[in-house]
Image (cartoon, rainbow, N blue to C red; front, side, top):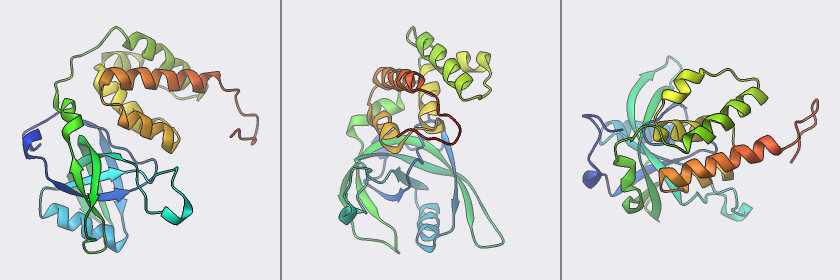
Length: 220
């Protein structure tokens, strides 16, 4: 997962700017492109570029009441800005590469319009472990993914899928598949790769068991 520009686990920052965005998840080793245009988040990106280049992606808490609209989920992922470009109309196009998950600690004072929190890294040291390759449980996941992609009329390269190590495959699917916020968050919070793989497989089984929508009718 790591490369020469990735900070070692022992040197991860004590605090992070956070970018609350529903459905936007960048798991370790994966990438997330973002289009930045709000002034406060432009400030955040420029400040990050001048420091450690790290931003914490978190989802708004879907269970929060209206009066607590600023509440965020307890766990997010720190991503490092690995590329950026400016546009003529004042936007920034950036790519975040996921480094390590963190638990959201105390919220600090707002800085230049954006939020910052204490980052608790302790539970996620395994995010720095080397991917061990394919595992026996992956065969169940491959089968479920093929069925899910077929149902959604999505094309996938089976050979490429099966060549991906377990951690890379699961983390990629967490960020890419069209799950609801709460479903995706449960996957983000599963600490071990075994738990994430099992949870993802169960979620796919649930999705495959749902009746397919007819026409424009949408099930809730």
